[in-house]
Structures are given as C-alpha cells and as structure tokens.
Image 1 (cartoon, helix red, strand yellow):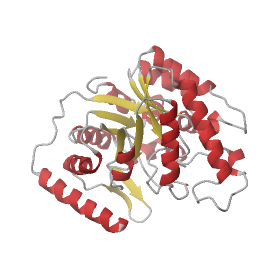
Image 2 (cartoon, helix red, strand yellow; image 1 turned 90 degrees about the horizontal axis):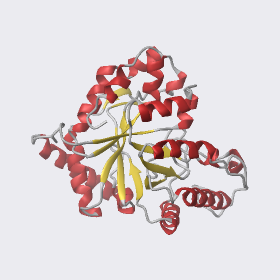
Image 3 (cartoon, rainbow, N blue to C red; image 1 turned 180 degrees about the horizontal axis):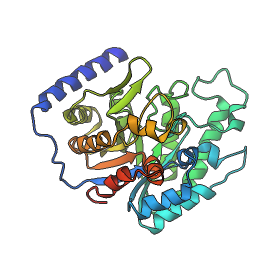
Length: 337
C-alpha cells in the first residue's frame, strides 16, 4: 500500500510539474534569504584552517543565516564525557554578529558518512530485540547527547530552530534502516525541552516529502542539479523549476498550508564518485565547472522558495586559497548578502 501511495504521489507531482512548466517561474529578483551550512568536520577533512574559513564566511561573505551541526562524536568523544568547546565557539562567533542559527542534532547529520556515531557507542552490546536502527543502549546514549545539547543552547536567542536528524527517510550513506517511531521520540524529546520549531528535512528529488513534512514545524528540502550514480555515472537532473513548485503545492494538501518550506541544502559543490578531499582541485572544478555552479543558483531562484541554504562554503574557501576565487566572489554578490 505504501509503495502504491508513493507511486501515485510521484505521478501527481510529475503531472503537476508538467502543468506548471508552461507557466512563469518565480521572479528571480524577489527578496531571497541566503544562508549556508558549515561543517567543521568537512573543513578539517579538506585540511583547512576551519576557524579562519568560518570567520571569513561570516565576515567576508557576511552570512547571517547558518545551519550548524552538533556532531555526536565531537560532542561526546568518550562515554560520559562532553566537549562543546568547538561548537560553543562557532555559536558564539555567529551570535555576536547577529546571525540566525539552525542547529542540527541527532545521529544522521550532514556530510559523509551521513550517520555519525562515536566509536565507543559503536562497541556497545547489541540488543537483539531492538530494531536495526540502533541498539537499545545506543538509543539511550543518543537521546542523552541530544538532551544535553539542547539544554546547553536553548537559552541562546540566535538559535531559531532545531533540525532533528538529517534526511531521516532517505536511504543514503552508511546508515542502517530508518526508524520512524524512534525519530518521533527524538522530536518529542526536543519539543519537551524547548519551544522553538523543529525542522525535518528530505531529499528534493528522491523523496515525496510527506513523512518528513508532517513531522516538521519547518520543512527543509535539498536541491541538486549535477549528480553522480554508480549505475549511470555523472548526469544532470532533467527537472524544471516548476517541479519543486508543483511538489510543494501537492504536499501541502497533506501537511497544511502555513508550514514554512525552505531549501536547506542547495548544491554548491561537485557530487562525484569520490569525496572532494580525495581528488585534485582540477578534478573538483571539472566536476562542478563555474558555469554549472552559477546555473544551479539561477535555477534555484526560479523554484519559488524564500530561503536557501547553500552547500559547499568550505569548498569555495578552499578554492579561493588555491587561486580560484570566482565561486566565493559569486556568492558574495548574491542579493541580500
């Protein structure tokens, strides 16, 4: 029944998209709020001075909308020991500049391998009666890390929302099977601790959004153009901007009309068969030429959302250090930055 429902929704989205295809797209010159996701973990894998890169994102790009990430292995490097020093610094630097922060918590968070579990937690004895998602003991410790993190930052007025897990219903990354029941418990825990809205995210092209959006106070979608598959290699999604406009309208019939929908992850870096830090700068740029980068942002403007969080700020800064500042400078010139 679920597969039939998903099939019917996809058919409706395609039909709606074709209907809107002949209509005007959104005004690309309207007021748009631009932001970025920043990942300390990814910056370190790129071998960057991550603090310097972060400060320049705030001060040179003048980013004032941020998604930051409370990685469980960084926050709780060993059992019973919490270390918030790096995240404290990120939040403090953003706060003194008046930036608005979405803070992501959970096990499945942005950046490969998608699921981030401390080594000590991986070694906990598996409860065979638990689901494949997490052992019983892992669940208890995960919930404790979420509780401690939210309690630490809930009095910071610059945090505007909590993202609970990242694309929890998307089968991607080195992650076990999703568990909707446990996700609901995580969301309930955060709601019990703080009144700020909960964001739940989903894939823009590979999911139908309903399960994520109905759980969210704010729904966040990804948006990609140039991707890679192990079956067909590199390709460009053959989806018009109207696809997203039609999809949003259809999904709102199931989740309500007032709920904010934002683009939480707009592609701004290459997606290829290897991680960016595993290939040369030349190969990186070949997989995401500057023209493709610009085209992706211009495409996004036509989809009609009011808030976009770009993906790839650490990469642009890395390119700038290697004599290719054009990506960084293009973002710097976007409206409302």
